Image (tube, rainbow, N blue to C red; front, side):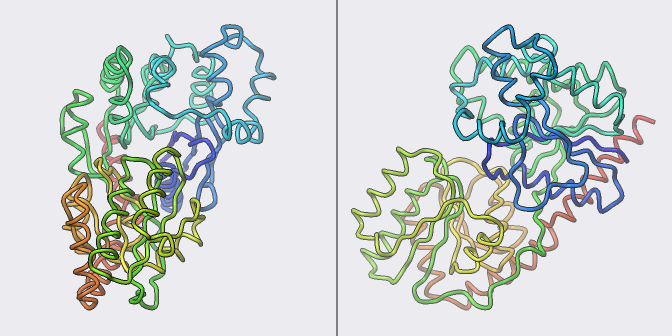
Length: 429
C-alpha cells in the first residue's frame, strides 16, 4: 500500500503530534507499506530518525507567510521559492518568526483552509503535482483538520481516500477572535465533507469532534496514541526518599504546572513531607513561568525544585526513571497524553486529572489515579497516598507498564491504522 502521510512541522520544537506521526510511519514501513512522510511548514524535530521516505518540506513557512502578506510572492519563480524553503533557512527563521498563537493566526489559517481560493495556491499546486505524478498514493492521511484546505483540490485530481487525524485543532480554533473563529470552523466543516475517515486518539474526543466538524460519529474511529515501547526501559526501582514528582510538558497555563506546585507546597509545608518537584519542558508562556517560579519561592520550595529544558529521548527516559510518581495536572482536556503514557511505560505511576483521555487510559491500564481537574488539595492527597503505600504505587507502575505494551505501543497503533486504511480501499474497489 502506498501512503502519503502529511504532517506539520512545529517550528524547531519537539511536537507530540509529530512524534506520534513519525512512530506510525516507521511501523507502517516495517509492515511493507510504501510511505511518503511529507512535512509542511518547517522540517520536523523528532526524537528518533526521520521515517524512510521523508520528503522535502512543502508549504515552507517563509513562503507561506510572505504569500499571505506580500502579493508579489504569490508569483515569484521557483528558484527563489526553493531557496526560501531550504531546511537551514527554515530552521533558522523558526527561532524568531514562528507564531502559533491562535488569536494571531486567523487570517492565515483561513487562507490555508480555503485551498485553491487562498493566498498559498502556488504551494498547493506544488504539493498536488508531487502527489499526482511520482507518488499516486492509495491513501492520503493528513495530521489534523488545519491542513484540510488541500483536500477538495486533491479529490478533484486523484480518486484516493483521505484520512484525517484529529488532535486538538478545535481548541486552537476556539481561541481565535471573531469573525475568524466562525469562518474557520465553517470552512473546516465544508472540507470535512470530502474526507472519508477521521482518526481520534480517544473515545472521549469522538463526540466533541463529531459536533465540531458536523460529521457522523461513525466516520470517526479511535486509534490510541502509540510509542516505541522498546525505547522506554523500566527503572530498577522508584526513588523513595525524597519522593520525587515529575512534570514533563509544555509550560503554559492550560498544562496546570501551578496546580502541581500548589499540591507539592501542601505536602511539604503543611504535611512536612520530603518531596522534590522535577520539571522539564519548553517554556511557551514566560509570563506564566514567572508566576510559577514566584509561587515556588513563596512556598520555600526552591531547594526542592529543578527545571530542565525539553529533553531529547535519552534524557527524557532518564528523567522519567528518576520519578517516584508522574503528574500531568492540566486544566484542559488532553487529547494524546503522550507524557503520561511514556511515564507508565517505564513503570512510574501517574496522577492525572479526571478529564479528556485520562479516564480511558487509567481504566485500560490501571497505571495511576485520577483527581478532580484543578484541585490541588485532592492532587496532594493522591500523591500522599502513593507515598504512604509504596507497594500499591509499585503495583500501579507495573500494571501500567504491562498495559502500555499491549494497548499503547506504536505497533498496536500501526496495526489498527492499517486495518482502517485497508477497509477504505476495499470500499473504493
